Image 1 (cartoon, rainbow, N blue to C red):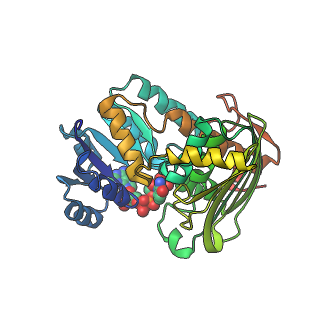
Image 2: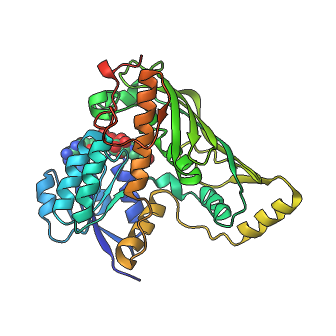
Image 3: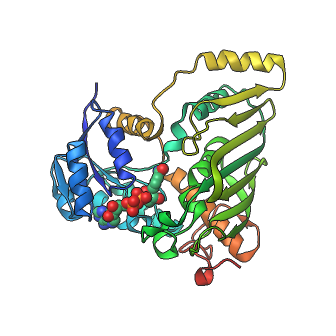
Length: 361
Ligand SMILES: NC(=O)c1ccc[n+]([C@@H]2O[C@H](COP(=O)([O-])OP(=O)(O)OC[C@H]3O[C@@H](n4cnc5c(N)ncnc54)[C@H](O)[C@@H]3O)[C@@H](O)[C@H]2O)c1
């Protein structure tokens, strides 16, 4: 077994789920510290997760000599600065989505990461569901053929209580709405499976809650390989559901996990166009070895990268693809035009994807 890494988790909302995952991997990680501005959350987490230290001061955390990994789970608008400081302190960094609030910020931290001693790992834990990993195996084996169409639905529910947390619902602090905060995972899966996006036309609306950011969106996409995709997002569903369907030349794939927040997990359904393709799918899936899922799945893979020289499971290019799609969705919804990718530094929304006046058209 390779080296155990000591980790500190900063931000104790979803950070508590990260801590549970580290706790489930005692041979891989030791929880060295927890950090939050809220001392009640800090005390509770320190005790519950047996953390070595509980700190409100990030600078003090960075000065701890025995921390290998800083895991940032604070609100989106704080990410860039906390990442830069942790990289400058020579630490490996893990950071929640969205990694930054603009492509300009992302390119700046990517440049910092290039010369840093530590690595930077964006979180996309939905990738590590075994259902989705089965599809990746079928793709690797060349069984899917040409991609035709993907349909991705994120129908979740957020009520007034969700927006009682002050940073949510506002452009300045949440940096976006349902496309950035909730559906970002399912949309990442589109790029993960069908490759880069070429063009986006989006409509966005705020209909469910009295917030600044969008809570409904309908997006039409052309991928670089010529296949098409639709993204449908709402935070106003009575019954929560996430669903992905991929139609390929040789088979159709559908996520059938009933848990809205575990879309990549089994069961996924694979249906070939002929009995022969069905036999090949069954033979390929017989070789599939299930692995850890969700945060545990991503942290096991990060550990392998940091200790055994394996590639990082999610890269800064993956985070950039995700934020390029976000930039394109917001620009298209604001301007009413199709937006082509890639988005470079001369694009008008490169430094700030927020719609003018913080409103859709
Ligand atoms: N991957 C996922 O499935 C997932 C799920 C939920 C949230 N998130 C992301 O995680 C991040 C946090 O979201 P949340 O819902 O947990 O928020 P939250 O408000 O519930 O928790 C954030 C915590 O960070 C603390 N904090 C803020 N600034 C800090 C600082 N400078 N130093 C130390 N602590 C600080 C706050 O006191 C708070 O306790 C967001 O980027 C969000 O999009 C990801």
